[in-house]
Image 1 (spheres, one colour):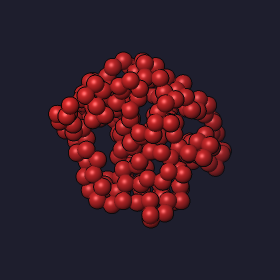
Image 2 (cartoon, helix red, strand yellow; image 1 turned 90 degrees about the vertical axis):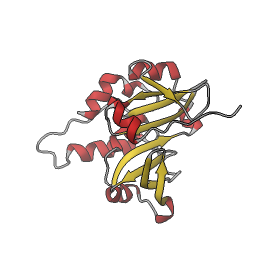
Image 3 (cartoon, helix red, strand yellow; image 1 turned 30 degrees about the vertical axis):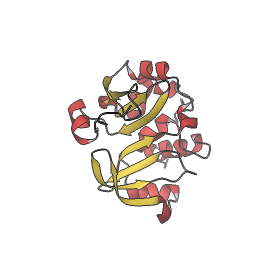
Image 4 (tube, one colour; image 1 turned 30 degrees about the horizontal axis):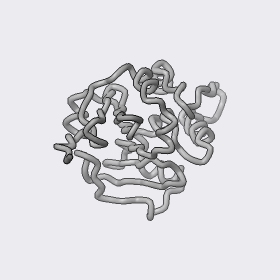
Length: 191
């Protein structure tokens, strides 16, 4: 269902996003979830960078994530904080993905992508159009002239200035929930 929603939103058309899916018959011993996982691993060509794959990981359990991607303890940081979220476990393994994965209560709740090489593949205008326009505009911590375009019902927030600054991927929620539980106003910028 989530994959179907992303295709409707046009996210499968973003750079690096796999567009195909495998149909699994009832006689196939592989579950649809296993097929989706296998396709994500296959499509990443060594690193998880495409938005479809990243969005599909939200909600993963930390133990399964660590086993699946062979995460070593040195890539874990406990008691991490991300904006208003606290008491998180952060996984950052650059050979797996430039993204940072934040877990709360053993569930993946937020993915943060700020790698300029990866983000450079996304045209800011096309990305906004595919996500449904400007979204809800909030101040971005990326700079005074940058805006955070929030698509909370889709589980995404994108900071845009002259280019895409960063992307947050999270469990879809109401805008008020995002602003209360994740977003933190950056405060006044120094000149």
